[in-house]
Image (cartoon, rainbow, N blue to C red; front, side):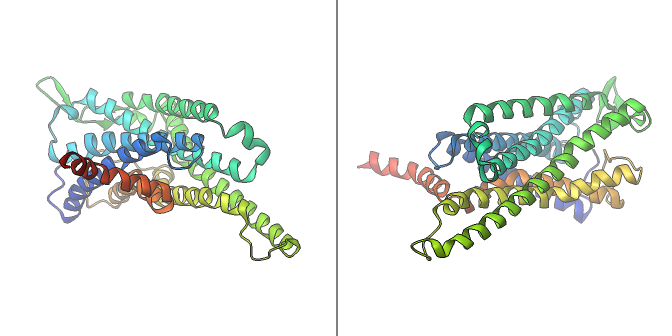
Length: 328
């Protein structure tokens, strides 16, 4: 609502969000196109999770970065700032962020089952199960956050037109809204954060135990220096799992701390810009890291998946190959 360009920190935010958009928007579209083709050598159910995560990350960038941050900074009195539109936009933002977090949980659980629970893997790690889980997660995430639409009131009313969104004071005093806020805090980000940490800890424990057992059996095998085919098979899944869930934990840590701080310190969320307030700075930096998480996964795929890099390279070279073909 308030101009951010008057301070160095405001200028940083004004530059940061267009950069995130310029990087994250095309990167997630590329991920969707590549994994949808199914040529990266990954299990089909895993590809479903990665595509769905890229779609929700794309929605986060569109709703939270483009329609909210960039529009608010450069076009503060646009159609998007009318209170009903603003309220709907915030509800969609919260639903997209919630969905992105819980799809990361679903992906982490799928990899945990694949690596640690061989008996359950046959039933769980299937295309049908993955699609059902993705559908349920997305539906519940948006339904859980739709009530954000009723939390706000206008900051100004000019010519009978309500402008901007300010959280109603009853949100912090009404038992119903306090209970709803507690539910939201538990479901996002607290529970996803804790579940991902727990699943990764169990996965690491399983890997350590399995490696010790294999090392004890190693001298009995015909070739002591032979590569372990089972561990080689799991290595790519383990690297991908730890890279995605690790980046989620690292980049959501400040957001997690901010949400917990707001509840413990009994302060309010900011709906305006005040660079002199430490709480606002904490909250805004938390959002910056959170949005960065939605742009980082494509680079994780490129860094950890050889076939993804090959498909990306093929896609980049395809237009030039077509030009050469037609020119000949």
